[in-house]
Length: 214
Image (tube, rainbow, N blue to C red):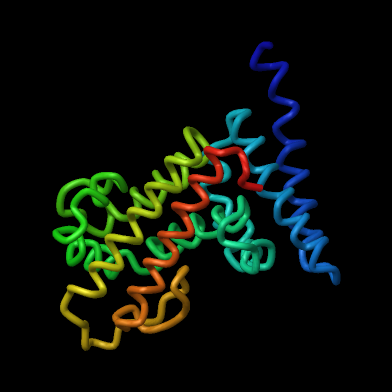
């Protein structure tokens, strides 16, 4: 099929997604779960048709709060739940890249294999963390979804190590809206929560490979 023949289907995919987002927040918990899953499946289907970059920046277009309404309450070991974490990872790296880079540098010596899996490169700065977040989310749409989840899990294990092993900041760092919740980024309680997110992502990757992630 030629490029010209494929192109008319792409706006329809995006329109389908917009309709699904608009339908989120109904009265029935079951219907909300079904809408969330359908939206996640629509994203992956559209990406398979070549719209990868459009969906990496989806939160910029529709707002992270819109995606939160759609996916925040989903089971973390589910397709929409896993996608939600990938978007939150990107949002955190965009909203506080210096803090993410600091935690990464503090944790990398303790989780060197995970740092390689995540793919941030050597001694990354804040710009490198922005690129890493885009790369992880992009790989979910442009490559193997399970590998993207493995990379995100590795990211959170490095961050957890950075929280445990790094020096605390005392300059009043702002709160972070991330998978570990809107708490002080240097709270020691966040390291176990980052570890939990990593476990959920690893479980989701295993379920994807088994064909059971929905």
